[in-house]
Image 1 (cartoon, one colour):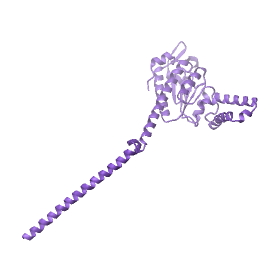
Image 2 (image 1 turned 30 degrees about the vertical axis):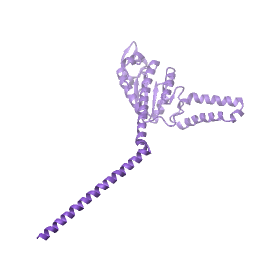
Image 3 (image 1 turned 90 degrees about the vertical axis):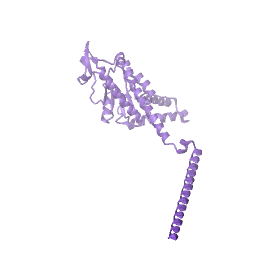
Image 4 (image 1 turned 135 degrees about the horizontal axis):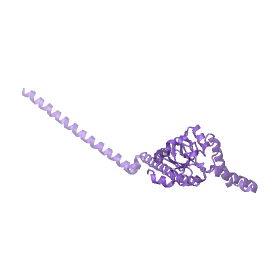
Length: 295
């Protein structure tokens, strides 16, 4: 997994924080200095935190669990939708539906409703509906698709959340904390880092900054998924039956025949050795009889 370079972060503007008067004192350990009334983030600490978060996400994806990305900001919507969809992970880019984690069964019912509408559209009964009914159902389907279309594959609670701007996504943060779900987040100087498991101090307003960090996290997840694929292929190879490994039925027959030949050879050797032993014993008996007669 490639390490994030200092120059990359600098060029992307990751070090730019908010105005001094808007800062959160809890972010003081991650602030390098103040310049022209703006706080500058310490990029050395950002690099360390990015590496920690990337390694943790790699291990989660390697285990086969899902990571939910949350970014409803205008600057991050398209970035998250493009990058995360490419690695088949769920994401929320439009609006965080309240109770999505704490009331997950209800969300799953809404997702299932989408599939039921799709089946209805393919059924013959769809042609018998009025134009108004079709329009209402189509609008309902589009609304559900817009909000929940990106989490169709999320059949159970995610193993972790990655959040862009914890201040804006405070409802998602509270729900994850309530359920003890690990939180990875880009945290700016105006945000509260308390309760965030993996803090990435960075500029969460610039699109280039968001793009760089999201890309780094996606690369880590890809590495985890590829490692998982290699491990599964290795396990499948180890679990193959003997005839498939050795070359089919003929190889098995050959092995059995060879084993029989070896057993026959060993049997002949034992018989020969037994015959020799019996001959030696008879010779000793004869010699013993001769000596008794001489006496």
